[in-house]
Amino acid sequence: GNKKGKAATTTKNNSNAMDKQWLCLKEQWSLLSLSLLTLAGLIENCPKAVRRLGANAFPQLLSVLPMAADSLQLPTATKNGIGDMGKEGEPIADAVTNAARALHSLLDDNATLIRSLPLGTVAVASTTPSVTSAVTLLTNTIKNLSFSTMTRLHAAGSILSLRRVVVLEKETGTTTNEEEQLIASLQSSTNDVVVPTLRSLFDVDNGDDTTSNPKQLLSRMMNLSRKISTIKQDERMESQIEKEVKARKEPARDIARRQKKTKEEKKEEQRTG
Image (cartoon, rainbow, N blue to C red):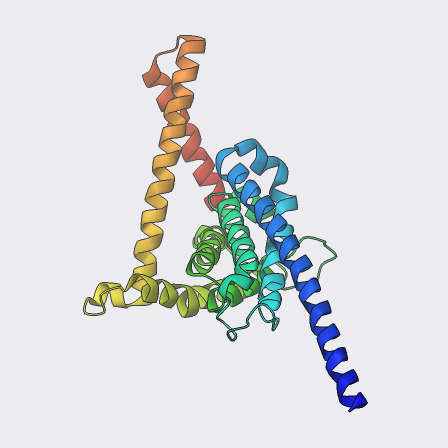
């Protein structure tokens, strides 16, 4: 009788200790979630923040994804079963959604940052995660059904942002073996994971041959992305012209011609470089 009583007491004490640890962990995740939400807002609304935080924020945001995936597997986080978090797992779910959102915003139209990252197929001494490791983590995030739809969508957006710079910009130039391996990884993730996920979430009509083919669907998505980028560049150019007109009193048409010529020269350098 005494043995059973002691065993029951030990079990209860262990359970209480686990509950206390879980409460502490939930508090830490809640604080992290608020910090990540603030960071996402800074990245989306303050270009200076992107320039200052970009290289440092990238590894921090990426590290949240596997950490959240592991935490969601804890028995306390999934009292109703794996993949069914309930309210216990909400702080983790919120934090990883904010991290994925911030990462997506950080990479979107940020070719400078993406080009500065190590490719990673060849081992290098760097504290910054490679693009290859980022692709793996993001792909795993998209496939993880424990994560919210929003988290998985932001991860898919990050993959497409990387693909746009690493793959599409290399279509006309020469590539190294390391780049070829990374391109293959991005293509595989896009065709096999991203596009099917997007199709399942947005219920694309399978009766239309143009939309049911992942590659054609992806091509349409990329064309739209390029058009949006061109519109943004034109808007920035118009704004710059207005400033120069006021400063120099030079005819707007002459400034536009000069800037268009500069833009074409840069594109030509990228093609030949």
